[in-house]
Length: 287
Image (cartoon, rainbow, N blue to C red; front, side, top):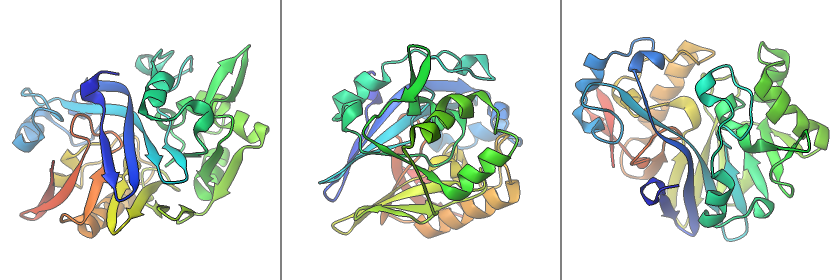
């Protein structure tokens, strides 16, 4: 992981470090957003250069976040993983230095005590497991894996139940007995609590951090790209409930506008964290 890809922030006595698997991931906006066009992207010059190109493409990252509290090592989401089967070839059989980068960030795999999955889509669960002698085993052997109860039940019973990423990165953990199903507002520890943010998936959650009067939130996929601050109605090709996702996003933007809560975007590349500020009738990020 290149030095410029490392982000580290302090929230009181808590440290958050991002572990980047892929960045930059440059894509036409229409591949992510139903309403996305290069012309619309170019109107938002504040996205340059980290989040958009001059020609109107969007820039994304695939990354995880290590939360280090005085007593815990908590990993939020686990990216794409190694040797995984994927529907899209660009995400299949990724070979990255994720675990080495995690160790450089401050935690070996065996030191992570909690893995939080904001939701169970393929790019957020990949490193949950790794292939050992032909078997998918927990990557973090001493961790409890926390899945939202509603999220898990929907994935188990829905159209994704037999998808490769569930078979490779979720079911083996259930079989190993290392999963705890939790409610959407579950408190993980004194400094970390889940926050229900449904829409992208039924049981999607964000992660709220509080320490010594300072606050931060890791978004998960309630926003995929900072342009959704300025275009909150834009729908993605990957949300299960577009209307719920839009309502959740608008409520989030209204709740966290200002400089009181530091917002870390799960797919925001480059300058990954900043503040949501009002910009006329909509919002933008201030880095």
